[in-house]
Amino acid sequence: MTFHFFHIAYDEPMILFAFFGTIVGYNFVKYEALVRAEKVRWSRQLKGIVVVSVVSFAVAGYYFFHLERITQLVAIGFLALTLLYTLPVFPKIGNARNWAGVKIYIVAFCWAGITLFLPILNAGLTLSHDVWLKFCQRFLLIIILILIFEIIDLKNDDLSLQTVPQKLGVAKTKILNLFLLIPFYFLEFLKSDFQVQQLWINLVLVVVIALFTVFSSPKRSNYYTDFWVESIPIFWWFMVFYAENM
Image (cartoon, rainbow, N blue to C red; front, side, top):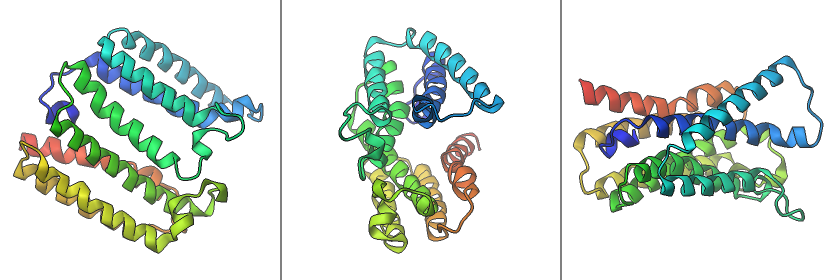
């Protein structure tokens, strides 16, 4: 979608670095603490995940050296954030994942930055007004989607995490989510080359997310988020692709 919006030619090293780097980053965040604590059972499934992670790390490392120098430096910055999020860099206060209320912003910043800044910089483009607006949109989108996850996970989350639903309650979190959809949508009007077609696409997206927000509940199955909410960015991409080729 970044390539589409900013008219960037297909960049295979950038795509494969982001894809395989995401696999490594996700698995590292998910399983590192268990391995470090030596509480993990090395099942066949987990061994398979380790193999996939190692292969992905090798592929991501290979394509890292095919990126522009500025892209490499920014990518290292996002790697540092991932390590800060996962590892107890500061022993007295633990990792950033356990800092009350911080997790949601680190995840949103990394997701928005990697999918937007890295392709832009690798293409030799500047971080223009429109790029920053798009970053704000994606940052808001990830915050909005994470809040739906936090509503579903309310029954399982440790109280020390101080998630938004834990502090505000489910009803107020839903209201906040619906409110955040407003700037997400209207930021599109501030772009220098906004298209009416994209406004309609984003309107459909906002309605879909609003419905997922309204019907979210801690009583819902994890598939509500793990499958349906996770698929929203793919649905957004499909609408953009379909509109471009109709």
